[in-house]
Image (cartoon, rainbow, N blue to C red; front, side, top):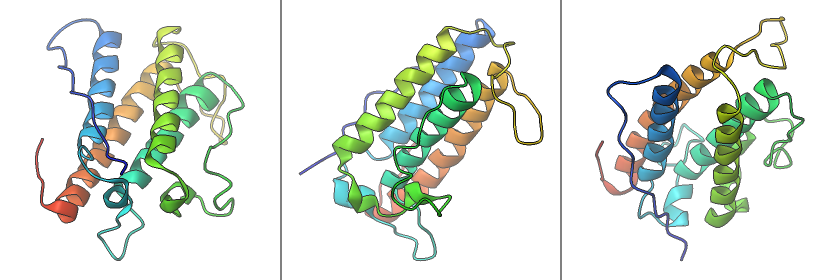
Amino acid sequence: MEILKAPARSDVPFHGGEKPQLEKWLDYFRQTLLVKGDGLSVEQLRTRPLASSKLSLLGLLRHVALVEIYWFQYTFAGLDERSPYEDLDPEDPDTEFARVEDHSLEEVLAIYEGAVARSKEIGAAHELDEFARRTWPDGRVVDLRWVYVHMIEEYARHCGHADFLREMIDGVVGD
């Protein structure tokens, strides 16, 4: 049986340079999302406890992997990265939340961990004031600082979703 084993969360700094703080806070929320599924089976991670929602903990992991790829690799670095989940339903913008039974926990974690590792490489190689290679459709451009702040916001929001999902799955609550 596949069980999620989350790494321990690292502490965040109370002072220091801007980039190291942004990196540590982003890592903290990356780890927190994994902690929300710690000890759950793949079947539990696939559970959608809210009848009105597609959200599952496994779907959230697939989603943040796509967000990592989109903002760090595709937008900031300008790489032509393809979604690992787009074949599920190319017409559905939220395809990563659908058909969660199509991938094992091992596959989802490998995609997620690979995306995070690549994001860290890209972030380490650039300065916060550097602009993304791709612009938004309306022509706006973001810098690496914006990408970090947006990613922290994205993870924080989804960690809140994960809190509710976990509590509904097995009653576990926590930080």
